[in-house]
Image 1: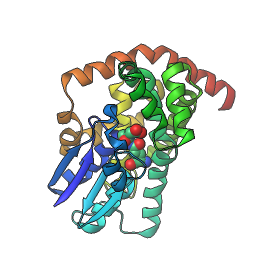
Image 2 (image 1 turned 60 degrees about the vertical axis):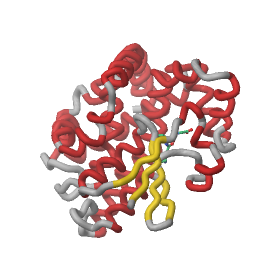
Image 3 (image 1 turned 120 degrees about the vertical axis):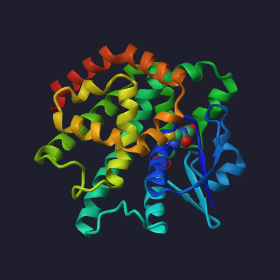
Length: 270
Ligand SMILES: N[C@@H](CCC(=O)N[C@@H](CS)C(=O)NCC(=O)O)C(=O)O
């Protein structure tokens, strides 16, 4: 039996859920409460030394990192196949995963934090907050948490995140301009799965059109991605109306400033 460690509204776990649903697999779930720092318990750190979700346990092995978990599932349970047949296409698939793992995940976390998790952090005790900042002794991550907690949307990490989204959406728009349905080899793959939760979160924060107002190909891809039954099962059906309303409210409150910061970025760098 597959055992998946997850947390509520975890974007990284959502891509694993999509993969599991696409493959028709069953699994057992263990919920880790990130706002009670359960991810830093010694029992969980023995499974995932970074103290993050998701983690997958299968046949006695712990598999970490959501991108690798999805690839693992596709290798261990080959049908239906979610990685392209040709090696060159698999390399292209991983270029999209690298967008996520080398910038978009942090971008989404920092924007989500500055919008709404910041409020949840205020509700923590001083000790819990300090524990979260300390994490597993990663000073770079601490700096990011402290900055988005204290400075919100004015944090430099939010600007870096805006730049990462700009680059990813521009790359998608260019790549999909030939009219293809999916990102790689015109077949739904782990590339599409990897991007879906991040685009969903930005849409739920009411921020998607900040970047995509003039990206018809991205929007065409996004409409198609949302039509897959796995999207409803992995993302929509797991969110409460309150969670959806909070994302819209807190994200919407930052909309204007995120748009302005994007313009600052474009004026300086594009
Ligand atoms: N690169 C990792 C990132 C995992 C990650 O940071 N997950 C978040 C939830 S989406 C988490 O567990 N955060 C808890 C913390 O940083 O304390 C992956 O893709 O699995």
